[in-house]
Length: 307
Ligand code: PPE
Image 1 (cartoon, helix red, strand yellow):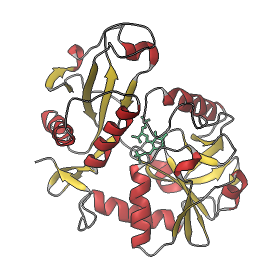
Image 2: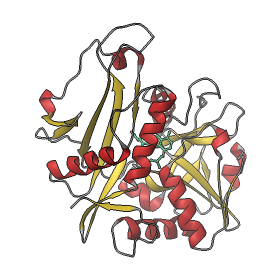
Image 3: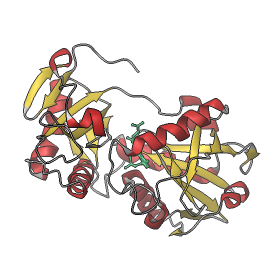
Image 4: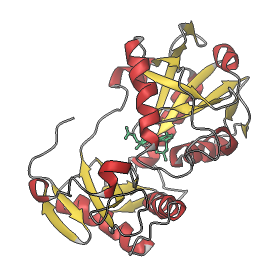
């Protein structure tokens, strides 16, 4: 990924050049990871750039902040407009948008209340997350020895920067073992999610995904895939998924803003199904991309046009 050095960052209502968009080394977030963030995709459509489910993403940012008692001084509408402005200001078409709310410079010490709550939004071009080839042929995944945080430790429904220290451990370990990405189990040993993706399995033509009780982020792509699949006539349900159930599934795939819908061809060096992208993942990818790229009617009302 290469950042454009002329990138403009929205910082609390003002656009700043990347080189000037800085915070203090003594900001609370630098020391204690006090940030919540979002990742949103904008797609190039025949009617110009369109941001995918931006209201749901910015509502999740507000919700994540609420968990940590960070008060964002903007309305949902203002945050949505700021995302649109950021795409426009940077003359981007298809891109990834990264809003972040963090505790800035004030005092140090765990108590954050004397540190200002600041918000910034960046946007840049970001291609496929795990890889172009994996989108077609499937990714090679391993189960991490690192578990997701147990309930009442780090709240996983908050998309907080600090949660990604846990994700990094899993992702680094996966790389060291020659896998493209990790799947993490929850504290009880049920399948939770990838380091930055939710997960689905296909069994006898039915879609199954871990529930919110399995220490997962409530993914917006997950929700979209559940809705698209139901609309295509698939039965979709949430369930506890044991590790070995992955091995025996007909298909396994990841969902996420960055990962979109990424098929999985192997888990722990066991071939999943035929060991390549399965027909259900392919159909869901096609339907998903037709919607987000504005090639078919936006029947769920998921696109916000920038212009
Ligand atoms: N689980 C985790 C842990 C996660 O980070 C993401 C998104 C998801 C599930 C999927 O959620 P959603 O994007 O709403 O469908 N991960 C973001 C960050 C990736 C990164 O490397 O940074 C993303 O995909 O934008």
